[in-house]
Amino acid sequence: MKNLHFLLLTCSAQGHINPTLQLAKRLLCGGAQVTFATTVRGLSKIKNLPSLDGLFYASFSDGFDNGTKPDDDFHHIMSEFKRVGSQALAHLIQTLSNEGRRVDFLVYGLLLPWAAEVARDMYIPSALLCSQSASAFAIFHHFFNSHQGIYSVNDNNIPPCFVNLPGLPSLAQEDLPSFLLPSSPHAAVISTFKEHFQNLEKDSNPCVLLNTFDALEEEAIRNVGDHINIISIGPLIPSDNKPLGCDLFEASIEYIQWLDSKPDRSVVYVSFGSLAVLQRKQMEEVLHGLVSTGIPFLWVIRSSEEDQFEEIISKVDEDKQGLIVPWCSQVEVLSHQSVGCFVTHCGWNSTLESLVAGVPVVSCPQFSDQMMNAKMVEEIWGTGIRGRVVNDIEEGIVKREEIKRCVEIVMGSGEITKNCKKWRELALEAVGGDGSSDINFRAFMENLRA
Image (cartoon, rainbow, N blue to C red; front, top):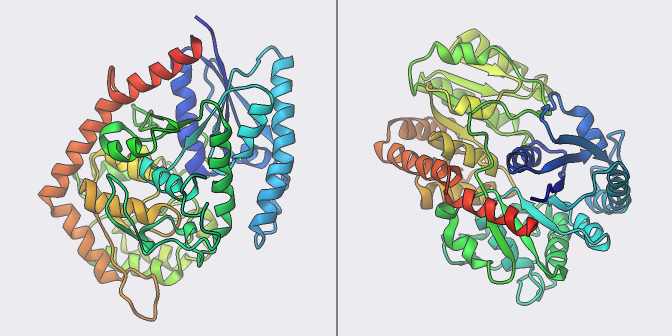
């Protein structure tokens, strides 16, 4: 049996690192060797690199190794990333080969479309690891494929009022991944996603690995399966609910003991991920909404935000109702028996982790695919509800009364709890022996070894 060596390439963001590392562990269990690579600065920031037989680490330059970037010029950042990253990746592949670890297969993440070009030029097969949902990928395909994609035939980059695809609810513009809207501050990423699909179409055997499972998004997977080899291998989440490793933030150590002291399903866990920075007014509304429920809460406020929200942290410390930590192992928290609700930005990793843990969610989406995930959670899977924004001068703010209402609903809803149990069982079944994701992954490996 051929001992394959995979090179996994990822952006240095927590939401990209987590599923990539979990895929690395899956590949190791499948008998492969893996080199996990991210940017020079990203690798230097990781607090805890897991030590596993057959797992190696490497870095590549993105042109901004000292961390200084012109934040107001995304096009320049991505152009420099492509120019420097392409050269660095080719050099890394050659170096690994010289060390006796020839790369047999490259897996690259979102925002790294140029990696596919490097792989093709060096005659190495590759696959995109999509760290967003199959539904989001179906939307991207609908917008960016060169045959009848909305943005391929429409230079104005103005989405229709509604998008209707099989397996998805009708999506208004505000439900779409936010960067697709010309008014978005992140609209510059459109060109990067166009490049992703251009490279997939140039590939003789285009392959996309999806962090999802068949039962969850069957129609969305089928919707783009004719022209691209779509392989669902998720959820890419540790089966033992232990910390993943490769955290970019220093975790607290006190929260598990605090959770242990609480009754079952009695705690609200609050986290808005590793990137979103909420407005001060929104943070205040979340605080007052949580306090008004009288329910204990565990709230992640990153250390980089502590100075900005010092008054909120002091208020929580005084009242003793909640505990604020700078970071934690989310899979560990969600699997704890005391957690009964998750107030979240609804990033895809968080959405999947809540499904696997069977914890209902209150979603307060901020940007990217989060609005779409929140809609799926509420309308398709029934595992939570979205906090509604009141149309007033405070645009985009979910008020304290709404936070309170949503938390109390999901903590007391038998129907939502029933749906959470259903999807938890289906998710665990998918990655278990002879589950759909397990079968898909083994077939993927066998095809490469053939």
